[in-house]
Length: 407
Length: 153
Ligand code: SF4
Ligand code: SF4
Ligand code: SF4
Ligand code: SF4
Image (cartoon, rainbow over all chains, first blue to last red; front, top):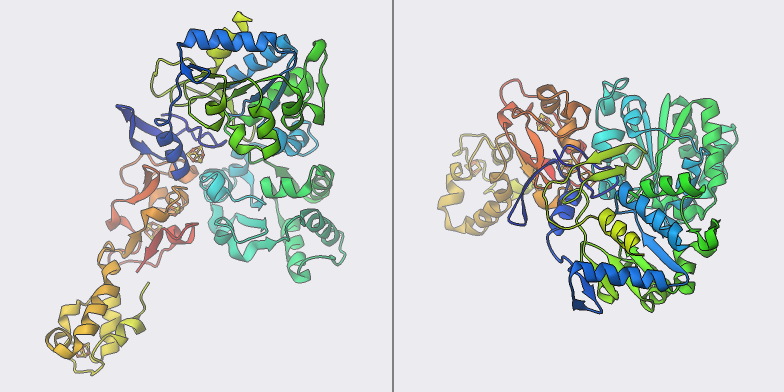
């Protein structure tokens, strides 16, 4: 059995056979995971300095040199690395007095902060499978983003208290701006919001729960929703990027809704993280500094805030180490442009715009396929895994350790 | 999927009974249920004036030909490999309660649906609830599919 690092569900029941650099047979991998494994074998990187092929030792030595001489380096990426690698990365940031940030900084950060600090009640996906009778996908389309979410946890499986499962005991609701693939599975329970209208929609739910007439939305449908929420025995809300972006950091309103719902019954929130170990990084950095992302260790002090986000730090730093991510093609143009002018060090198994632009490229083993370690599932459960094949390439963790020793 | 009415429109509509059924409409229903074969309507095959209709009928019936005996058709190109059908199918759950029953990939050879190489595949279709004398109109697999990758004819 192997695990899949295609998304943050980290499915552990995968049977995969690999021969001659190809995935020959795979059982239980969803299409997304299958694509992730297949892509693993193409467009691999090799060690480079200034776009010229070098050996690994030279690339590591040059990376150490760049970081050592930088005044304010930025260390960014992390959500596609193991906990072990992230831990070394945070120590490296501390040692260098660097700024460190991860991909949560521009997506699920505000939600993750609320959950890890306990302001939103949360639970594991196994609890959802065992107890939940209502699952609400809000601004999320797991059928595309986390394809096995509904079958493994949130809708179709049987659980301890839910032996009759979706047939009789579970209801699935979708709140979204559109008819997504997931919404198509529970059409009668699709509640449409206008783009950016989620905060208003929450206010409307709060009114209905207080027995008042809601100001927005189809009144009859809102009252139906209120009744469904009140009748729920054990509910789970899965906020996706649609909700998080729409709330623009206003987590208080979601916290207020959950507090109200929990006066009536049980309701939990389980995040829908994209990259397989974003949550791991957020947890580790929080343990160390009290903040989940956007931290600077400059001058031995811990500073946190928007100034330390990749978007701002990209403009003020003088070198950057990017681990397992492609900011040049994924981040807004101004940030990508600011990064591209820096001496970049990219640790990545795959070629990307970022590795093409980097001063130093260090190839790494692919977590899950070629390297073992530990990762934190989207719901906080730690998952340990072994590699399927031995590529003879060092993992992120070893590379970072060697850079650290060389500094 | 093609309807009985669409099939009927492509038949001679003479109710000549040569197919062994009282009306062309009954024959259309028979074709759709795969109890009848196009060739049993001899006028359609033999008479030149029906040639265009015959060709069109063969065209619309082609997808049905590929259906399994239970009428199950899989469109792998649409499948997400999400496993919803695998976990919902009552035969799968009965055959492998400790895996399919709780959302995991099957470990038993007796299941009907499983996900391989990223998409669903069907085996043991004779076990499907829609098959055989005591058949029922189970639709657990089609109703739980987010992408219409499974259908029945
Ligand atoms: S749901 Fe996610 S972790 Fe599971 S097989 Fe699919 S991509 Fe991989
Ligand atoms: S043989 Fe053809 S034309 Fe005659 S009744 Fe049957 S379907 Fe109609
Ligand atoms: S019709 Fe029912 S028994 Fe047959 S494959 Fe689909 S879910 Fe399983
Ligand atoms: S056929 Fe449908 S339900 Fe079954 S795995 Fe494919 S997409 Fe999912």
